[in-house]
Length: 222
Ligand SMILES: Nc1ncnc2c1ncn2[C@@H]1O[C@H](COP(=O)(O)OP(=O)(O)O)[C@@H](O)[C@H]1O
Ligand SMILES: [Mg+2]
Image 1 (tube, rainbow, N blue to C red):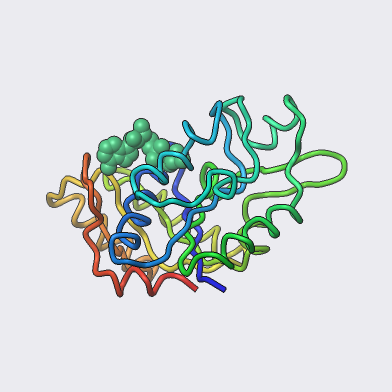
Image 2 (image 1 turned 90 degrees about the horizontal axis):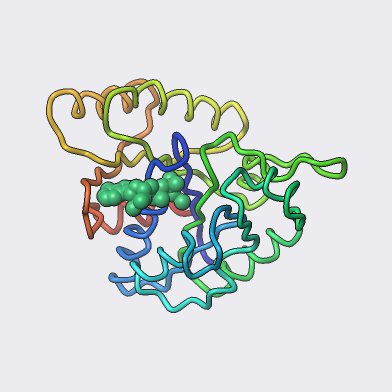
């Protein structure tokens, strides 16, 4: 069985997919048998033009499309609302089964979450499922992607507080859209001091490689 990590962020559009692609590429380039999985994705017409297809292309992995993703919704809204509109609500048993299949095939599996850490996945009479229920069901620790700029101390600390208070683990933070300078360097330092969680990488706009030691990256997986 392979190891996994759950990539979340301080919000939607923060760069989870962009950074996940660089992570998977880093592992693949190092010759590691690595895979990707996303439980539910909204706002794409096909797997090919979704987050999953993007990661597959950038990372240069050959995992078959159908195993990258369990649920695809057309409407660009939270999966719970998309399922209320389109039908096909998430079945947690299927997610567990699909993920276990990916984990049985690959040594390192990077799982991308939907939205931020608070994201309803299914909300109807039968099931009330939040993203955190999936993180826990899959037995994964989290990695938090955040913007490097102003406001990120608040966003990261709140996200990590939520993660911890809801029984999940967190292994690292990656700052995206990093430009450096006194404020962004201080943001990284303050995040580490306030949470005790390391900022394991910084990603600049347009980066095509993740600047991190491969052994350090491998350590966040369990
Ligand atoms: N470091 C970066 N350099 C260039 N473009 C980026 C970077 N990070 C994010 N983006 C772009 O910003 C948008 C949102 O990023 P994405 O990874 O899709 O966010 P999320 O998966 O968190 O919703 C995308 O168009 C993506 O290509
Ligand atoms: Mg995404």
